Image (cartoon, rainbow, N blue to C red; front, side, top):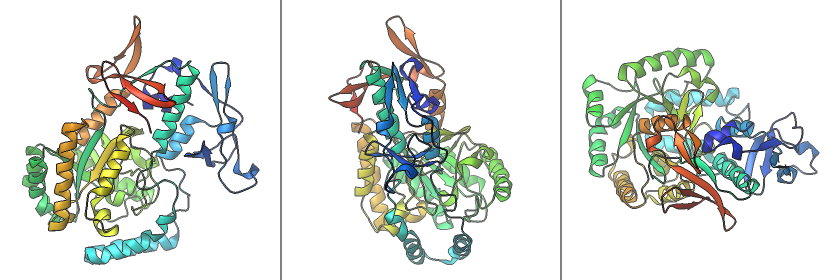
Length: 452
């Protein structure tokens, strides 16, 4: 019941002594763990036993037995339920009326201008404003729960520092990813200028292209992306919104998608419209996926993985989308500044997380939007020089996360060391309680991060 927590931190098992406090209920439900953390799954307290409809707080059910922390839930179950969006109702998005509306929208979409589409999308998303969980614009429930459990572990070990493998290579304090999904012919034609913009500010980025129906993909165009040091990935099959409509259709399309991935030597995949199904992901033969948002209030499919850290979905490394897409910023929220992006980056940085962006070449052709993107590039360039986040290509993050998952911490005389493939890039970190709060320290570094 602790493997997901151990995978998150990669700390020695001897510091993690969790058990289950009581027999768990049979029905997964929402509950709280303290005042701020919302969870979904089976717990020692069932809502049906409560006098009101508010999710129960299970923290009072936690107790310490000897040197073991007895939790009122199964940690693995809760983290998997959140990351795989099992908390979203089974009927959500599956009613015949909603399926018909989606089919009609995607049939008409090629003939609709952005001015028309944004009004349709605003109407469709109006009910999302009432959603309390996941929290918008970013949800860090997975990360907050892991940090809370680490706090209990530190205290259970008489406030000894708990060693773990730092999240990022070397001394990087976080990670920033720039990705570009190419949706239409106009966007494909603008890719060269977009690469020029990224290069001017020293920003590395990936391009996700649609293999069929949308636009011409000549070998010269694909080679131009790779030759300039950018990454080339597969973006859906034809971006018609039906990839996950049923399992048979998904498998048929997944075979074609995989073939394009092999043909282009692409390591990454992203579904069109951020549609996704974690239970079917094993059919995708890629190194990593980028189809899960942290909080999906502004996406066609609601939900969210509730994390700002990479994680594994089967054999895939998932690199979640953790910032607002440019299309949503410009055409749904009607904001033409980087203020929201800066707020999101600050919030992500407080957990040393992954700030990942989707900026479409299609939607930064117009001068006002292009100037906003240039402001973002300038801000990111300055940020990378001053606060030292890692700014790699997505494939490099996926490779690092896979290497990190195979690392371990072992005793080395009177201290600890990291061993495993790629350990020369890894850093030993410590979790400890300072002034009542969990903080992280990197060994041989002046860095001290307080987890918020």
